[in-house]
Amino acid sequence: MPELPEVETIARRLRKSLIGKRVVEVRLSGLPLRKPVAADFASRLRKRTIRHIRRRGKYLVLEVEPQGYWLIHLGMSGRICYDPTEHPAKHTHVVICFSDGTELHYRDHRRFGLMALHDVASLDQIRELQTLGKDPLSRGFTWKWLWLLLQKSSRELKSLLLDQHRIAGLGNIYACEALFRARLHPGRRSDSLSRQESVRLVRATRKVLREAIRHRGTSFSDFVDSDGQRGDHQQHLQVYQREGEKCRRCRSWIKRWVQGNRSTFFCPRCQA
Ligand SMILES: [Zn+2]
Image (cartoon, rainbow, N blue to C red; front, side, top):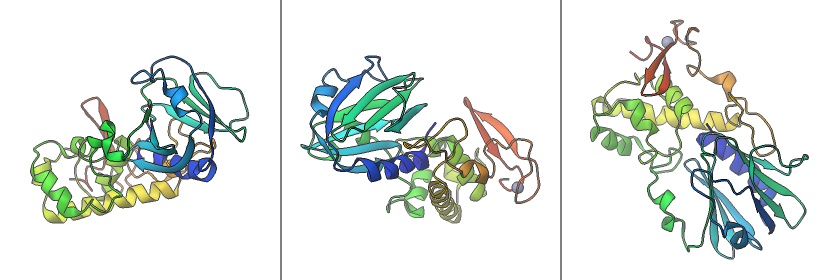
């Protein structure tokens, strides 16, 4: 499942190739994603030009002209291919053709993604983004902000980190990695964290995400960016999917623990 670093990697790639391009044709498979793609999505996106590409949490936001925002979420298995050499592969649900002859294909075999065009004047008017929590790479993600949030919750720390309405962009991989770096047990009660621990968690989260972006994301299952390139961050993971292997810091065995329906990986000694 693509998380913040993977979406950021795609946003950076697309900025290099899509800015200034005009949409000339949009083809849809007709199958619904998380929600059905609006019937008029194709006719409304046609003839618009890509002006800016941003990321909000795990959302890609393409600002188009005449004024509008094209919103994409990759869900569980969404994949964006910019100008692939082959015909649309299986599970391609959206094909966008640009005036220079290049194409963008959206593939998604599990269909949990989202594709929408919002004709609003500002990003704040888009409902999906209104309910989104703070982005860990934004300026407001400070230890104090996080500490106050933690104080209000008795939930397990890791489940709070995954709550997109509180913190936007973390998924299972980077939540596990951030907690390891901060040396915090994933099952700790959120309101039990000290100020100092909140400082550690903010630093660890930002560091893990920045490193992963530098490595162009984690390609564990099948993540590839819009140019079809795999990321490298899987080689740098400390705990995620390393059950039974030795902790790189203390040589203890990494453990897996099932919380809800998700596997949590942690070092029982470093994260006591
Ligand atoms: Zn350890």
